Image 1: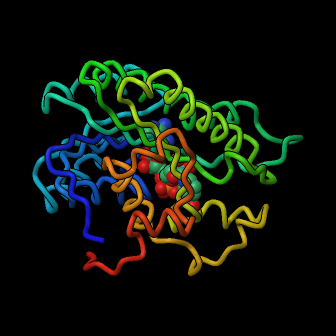
Image 2 (image 1 turned 135 degrees about the horizontal axis):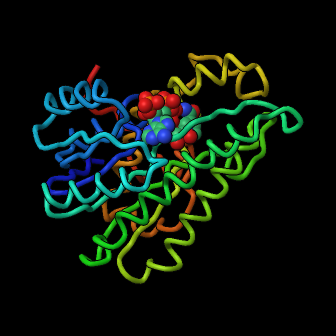
Image 3 (image 1 turned 90 degrees about the vertical axis):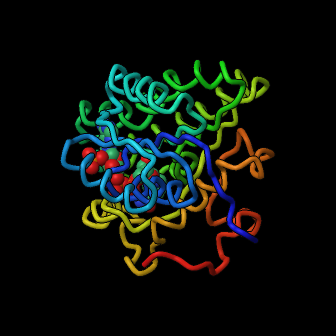
Length: 262
Ligand SMILES: NC(=O)c1ccc[n+]([C@@H]2O[C@H](COP(=O)([O-])OP(=O)(O)OC[C@H]3O[C@@H](n4cnc5c(N)ncnc54)[C@H](OP(=O)(O)O)[C@@H]3O)[C@@H](O)[C@H]2O)c1
């Protein structure tokens, strides 16, 4: 299938300093979107701005820690000021720690994981929904995980956060699906990022023993996100979507051999 373009769309991606978030930001920009790629430090924001500018010169790279609602709200407000609209929110920022069994885990680090992965995504939704509802259209993509529905040893916080995120996706659909808001949970598969370096180092469950060469390139889930930004995906709204599902890969054209950046 031919690649779906995103000209004229404005998309905000959280946690874009590296890994899947960075790949999503670059992929959406490559398809013509105006990308607001958030990260947590001036250094990463400047590096991201340079990278985005090489793809298209439309974007903006504000600093935003998703644990703090005021920072998320400011990123959304700045997006509206600069670009006049927000079409897509990608709640990507996430952490895997703490990796520990429940009898030894640090309760504060456990709560921190929920704060980033779940409350951080709520912050994005809370800030983005009013302007999206005012325009009668918006796409929210929550970067989910197989951990949302399968417990893994040592990952209780991560699994609980992603299970909660899946419920957030359903709640958005229940409350606003009839008012033009399309929410998706995207499970990216097992992807070669820094998060997986941490997982491998832990050795705590079967996922930590996967070989690096068997992991997916971050550009694979990034292309899936780009597909979900498009009206072609509308019938999947409200669902948890597994990037490795052959039916999804087929309709999204994920296995097509297009010309790719190195
Ligand atoms: N890799 C996988 O196999 C896999 C599988 C399923 C789901 N996922 C999900 O995919 C998403 C991205 O993961 P990844 O693999 O790309 O991980 P990663 O390489 O570790 O990147 C995580 C990103 O989240 C950011 N982040 C962490 N805490 C943040 C906070 N408080 N506020 C804002 N940003 C924050 C990080 O920013 P800093 O650079 O500032 O730390 C970084 O940009 C996560 O939601 C993860 O759960 C990944």
